[in-house]
Image 1: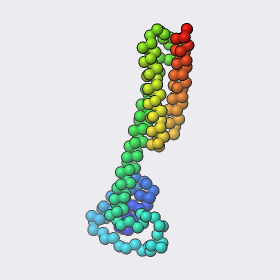
Image 2: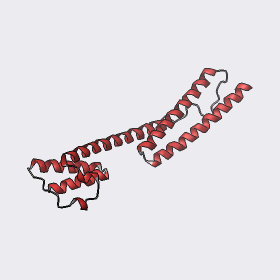
Image 3: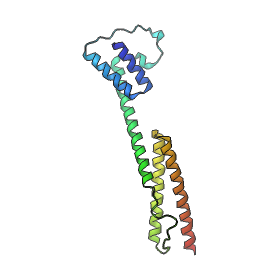
Image 4: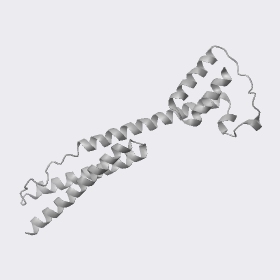
Length: 169
């Protein structure tokens, strides 16, 4: 049973399956507490896959499994945080002054503030998109954010051109 539990853990670590690693670690711990002794494997070295996990002693295997589990949990946490950040950016993407709203051209502070707000949103969203891609966030959410980003970028450029044209007049 202990050899089977070790093999299950080796396979889980190789597959980077967090749930299976956790389950196999628990099973191994229960078997250790029950006093089961490890028997030498019936496989010879020549029959081994050549995988470095197959050659690790149990204590090192448990350390490797624990480390892999921690890395997988951190990656899942980063993925969730990146998805939430991207969703936050999409929610904040509502334009405070749409193109149809007339602005007082003499009020440079308002124009400058709107331009900076739009630039800030664009930069934050670009960063959130990059982080989401690297973290493995759902492609549909990334595509939705890209579409919104490009739409907002287009609006930002149109506003900038409109403001420049009005200031020239």
